[in-house]
Image 1 (cartoon, chains in turn green, blue):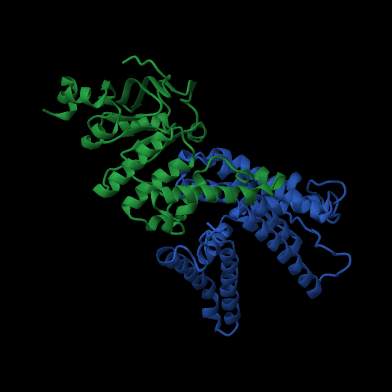
Image 2 (cartoon, helix red, strand yellow):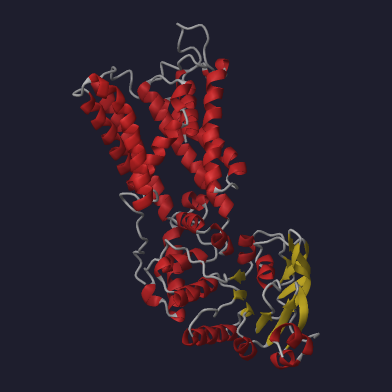
Length: 257
Length: 282
């Protein structure tokens, strides 16, 4: 388990998050290493989505630490965490419905001139330039994910699969170092799922780290270099796919006989 | 809403008239020794309403939209009662009168003065419209738009939703303060009971009718609403007196119905929000 190589990009240290009496995440510790796709699996209710929300800052942990690139980020508001390069996509796509696809991407850009009211007075001349630059980046990402034609369509009019793509495109727009993908291919047709997964793999090669929750075991075993199994709010096991497949405790609690 | 218009009106009234404007009555309201220049008093009204808005928003913006609406209605009542009871400060139930109009020393009261005032009011409205259009189209406006669509997503995309809402609320309140200043100046007299919470309701009707999310829609809504009340007032004179008396109530019923119909069938209003299409070729 101890790695020689780069330090972890993300460390979860003894994190607990309870809702009422239910400890959704219960003393969970794990590490995610840079440059690879790490899968997080576990039965329903194991605490995977809750853990993701804690990492992204949407929930503050009751106990424990979240460390991203050596800095504690637990307790920071979500918008500050995003700016450090840790971006999360939603399990069910949450497009900004009455905004165009392009606007959905533009919003996700790291801070640009004109987002603060003081910019509008102090340096209004920088705004058109910044906008053009953001539109350019958005255009490239839309071309990459294949939503180019739909640029000026309202996001609410996209199909389910297209919304998944938009979700990923938006995450990329934020120039992330680590992307948390909550079920990136759930409910997507096999062809599109393959496209999405190929895209993730090529982005990984460009240096983005992925940490994903997925229920489709074929996908997880084939695409992830490292798998972490969660059970009842904590880490049950971790290892490369082959090891996980053979681990009796994992088979017992999740994969089935 | 009534709260901020009221605060704007009173700030403007107190600053522009000064302390001793009305020698005919025993008590007087607070004010500077000399009445301020009208532009300065108008800016003062905007600042006070805006600052009050931000102060009120800090605790209440965390509430959900419907509770926020209740909180602002309650605030309107508080403001009205404070204006009414703090006699030595606002003049209380006694009218705050002798509020000047712009260019009053050159143009005596009458149709010309009314016309001139209209020009000033239209000018102010245009300036506000230009400012708001600029803000909406700027990246700041886009972020705010995202917060409206889905606050949690906006935060997950790196937007400081609370600060965005706070500043938008403050700007809105400053503009309402300006509206109050114009109202005070035009009527030259204000009383606390003008600013009842029901006044807020008319503003909502105007906004929903014309199109929330579209600045031009709100202007159109204002005209439609006014046209409707004006027409019914005109019709009134031709009706027998027993019908005549009931017309005001029928009027309110129709406005209420119209509001429900719009919310159900055309929530975007007469002029819906415009789609953003960049001019930059992509």
